[in-house]
Image 1 (spheres, rainbow, N blue to C red):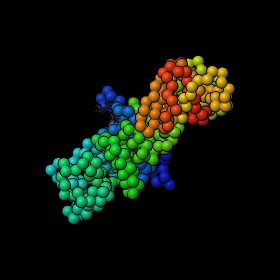
Image 2: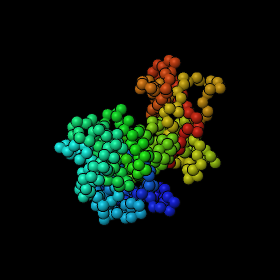
Image 3: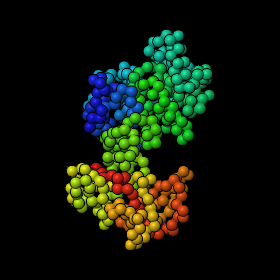
Image 4: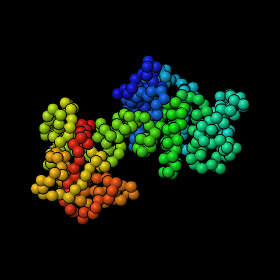
Length: 374
Ligand SMILES: Nc1ncnc2c1ncn2[C@@H]1O[C@H](COP(=O)(O)OP(=O)(O)OP(=O)(O)O)[C@@H](O)[C@H]1O
């Protein structure tokens, strides 16, 4: 699958074609195809061991591809070492030289490249200003907080003035609040610099905050690529629904297909999904997903004909289990009659929490339910 091609005839900043990477018997990546436009903030998101770091490092030249190509601005860079590629890398650990002050840490790459002292100083100071660290140039790394050390690392990568910045779990070592702040800073910085950022993370909130587009990677394969909002609001694949946001997933079998609707048997109850996918057939195993904040739990009123009764095909019977208070939101959990669990996440508390075992109905608006065939 190739995503987004050339921009006004200029080649993408990064293009990966049919990429595979094996470590001996371990298959870390299989047939990855990806295209990232110049100036894009792109996140590689997925579970641990999925292949994100391997992909990033192969783009940066730290690994050689087993099969396939990496093109940077249209040029096949398979033969080039990291320092000859238009990329620079920010690592998860701060990896600063402890005996050097901040200024020298930032300017180190320039020194290696043979840039003279004055120019090095000027560029390093400008990079420090960019990351909000002017005034810290004389300090040693141990005199900085974790967030400040991470900024020094960013400055050190930026000062090289390469077009593509590769960030490998750059915020993993920071606490939750600092990570949130740094996410926004990174996004603003990328916007200001106009560089292409590729950011690896297993944290979906981080990916959603920073990225224009997100690629989901699991088991060495690209599962889905799309704008951050689409991946959250309208995941195409079951795996995406299970990994991004908090989705209820119901597995079932197709019982009827009409022009725009598919009926699915979910443990004996018919659920109807809007779908114009004409490849769906009766008897096929499919999954349905709906986000927890779009599910409503109400006390079951047998034979009720009230106006608020859920629409046929848009509810499942369940029995109430418990409330989990999460601060801003509360998750109400219920056991589906046919097995499995359903979660309804609400901002306000329910007026009164039902007793465990109370029959309830989990319902949703038909347009919020998505059908997944894979
Ligand atoms: N040098 C190596 N030798 C052998 N196997 C490796 C090596 N590096 C990675 N792997 C394996 O390749 C697969 C992909 O690893 P990779 O580090 O790319 O995943 P990841 O998605 O970045 O994971 P994490 O989020 O945990 O860093 C895993 O199964 C991993 O064990």
